Amino acid sequence: MTLVPAIILGPIAAGAGLFYLKPDQYRKCLVGAVTVAVCLGTLALVRLPAPAGVAGFPIEHHWVNLGMLLAEAGMACGNPSLWRSCWRRPD
Image 1 (cartoon, rainbow, N blue to C red):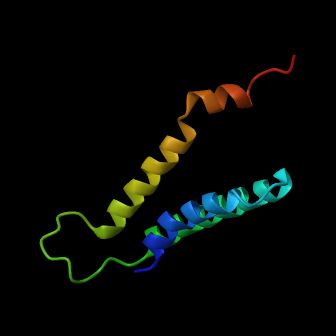
Image 2 (cartoon, rainbow, N blue to C red):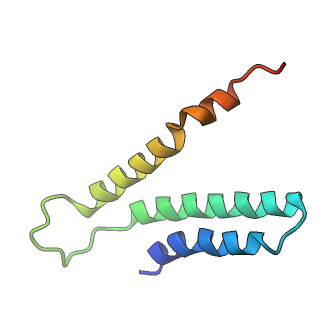
């Protein structure tokens, strides 16, 4: 199960790499690439089949992963300051 540690440690390693990148263009590319990688990793995690060895767990593993994905998407899209800055009229 290396997907979960990669989703967690990947952005931390990228943040450490930002200290060494001076041009903003390279930094934007790195942040964008890590964001896409984390999104794809989260989607891959949701698509994993449920483990057969979990006895007595009342909810299927797939639904837990899907719920967590929806919660993360809600947190990402529910930031009011982000929406205000995106829909602000230029002066």
